[in-house]
Image (tube, rainbow, N blue to C red; front, side, top):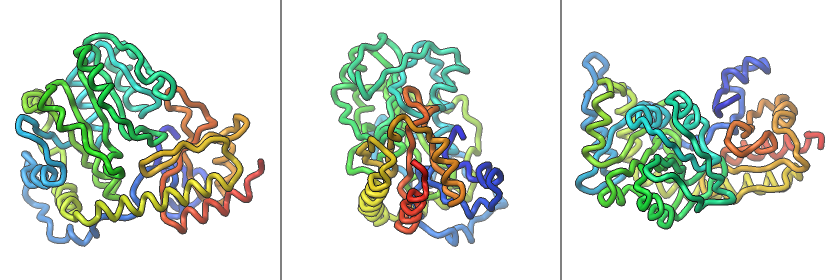
Length: 339
């Protein structure tokens, strides 16, 4: 599977219902910020607000940004990625890998000259002047949180267009890079809301950028990208401010349990010290993640093999942080794996 979270395809293959799959492949908070009952009074007859006024207000309260900066919402962070790159039409694109396969896919469709930089081994590599750089922070699939100050300075010195994907930043005690937009108008920040707020089926992400850049991006965007249900749910979720610290503490605790389960299994020779809601691990002796996946099918556990991340192969696996019962079930299933 090329993307995490496809429980439907997996369930068909192993002969079970999707709700019977224990999905460690998709990095979604196991706890939701609000209950679906908040949608009962949503009016479906009128069109949704095409300017997303109440949603933008809720986003700004949760993610303050300075004057001269604006936002544009999308039906998910993936849609934001595609829309932004199609709008920018970059000639030279620099991808700090490993990272989402979606970036390389759209770059190929646009005919970009793509350069991959291995951030594990040569983070401060030279890049072409006036290129567009994409950096995910905290990174995926390893979850490392970077201090971007030195990189930002080098990118700005090369007059680059900068795209920072902060889809997992909410899980960390760290500030967004968005405040830098007022000093550099070629900086774009992408955020996902569904991952942190535990609602992958509610498709909302957004882009923060200079007001002029957002207006340019909006020229190519259709009206009514978001449904009334999407917006009503997310407005309620964003208002639950107590959920933020609760989730960060819970994620740190469960990540520790997951790390211990992976370590105790004896299957991995390296577990990356991620700071998001997932962990990257490498199978010992060049083992195959697909073979491990096959052995976990009897337990109906889905994991993410990372061979479609640039620079990684099938020995790398990403595990989402789940609740204690799910982690215990994974640990138990590891005991039945043939080494």
